[in-house]
Amino acid sequence: MKKRVAVLFGGQSGEHEVSLVSGYAVMAALDPRRYEVLPVGITRAGRWLAGPGAHAALVVAADPARLPTSFLPVPNAADEGTSASAIQREFSLLNADGALDLVFPVLHGPMGEDGTVQGLLELAGLPYVGCGVAASAVGMDKALMKAAFAAAGLPLLPWLLVRRAELEADSEAVCARVEAILHYPVFVKPANMGSSVGISKAHDRAGLRLAFDEAAHYDRRIVVEQGITAREIEISVLGNEYPATSVPGEVVPSGEWYDYAAKYLDGASQIIIPAPLDVGLTAQVADLAARAFLAIDGAGLARVDFLLDKVTGELWLNEINTLPGFTPISMYAKMWAASGLTYAALLDQLIELALERHQTKVGGALAR
Image (cartoon, rainbow, N blue to C red; front, side, top):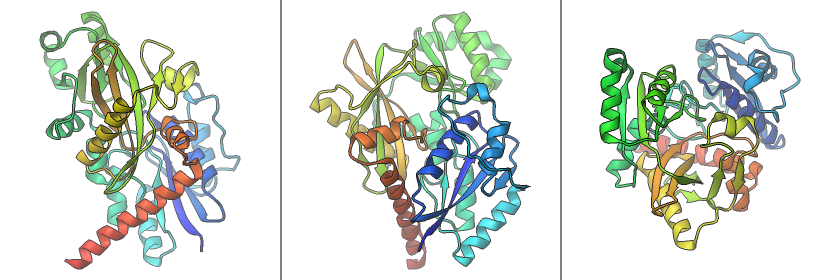
């Protein structure tokens, strides 16, 4: 019997367009012999659209300038929208009747990847792909993430947290504090955002002020990290209690660093899979990635990013992404493909992991 899978995409974050591409890729790759797909889109305003035309409706409303050129919309007419509360009730009712087997959230950034939707699905009693509420929240918030990594003894570059209220009160004092702890260049990031949205590299105080203005547009909490001359190494994680890791990959950005344009728009960045690392360093990347995944209590999937210092050779953990870009040409899927796992097989495994995790939680509750 086919499993009925609801695929969530869109969302209210700055990564709305990226989610549209990821959501389309997932729906196109799910084997129709094994799955019946229910598309569920979330508009920028938070309105939920269900049905075959949901994806097309969100594409029409999206900003074409920020959509990757490879984007292909679903050619269906838009269905009528329903409120979020109605969708929530529908999820609960469908689950009670056993008609909906699983939810696949392909939402990037706040209001989707940060534990909010995961909490809704927990309340509805529905199995879902990916990390749970706590892991999603910690993985989304770069400051909480770094605190968890530090507690687990994982290697981190120097960093500090700045609050938007501090900038509003005395931005020059904040800049002086940054300069007392770190040295230029520094990276300035919204604590809760992904796909390099809102991130800037600052080489001096004037650049730091501009970077704070950009990051504060997206979040009230801002992370400032020490910049180094580094190679960017990534690796994919798959599993629940015993996570497996793919071969690592290396990103050679087209610009000074791997910003939004380099990731999605200019097409000039170079991806090297597997990354040209020696055996020992490859093993270290895999070990640290699995430890980072377990440090936040990850489940299902994550991509873990590292910085390899070109001068000292030191390996630094940068961040974990609990729901990375999910097209067949995204790094997460490409690294698994290079490890022998096709995109369609990867989706199958993620669905099985979600069902396994749900049964484990239900079984544990019954045992008590």
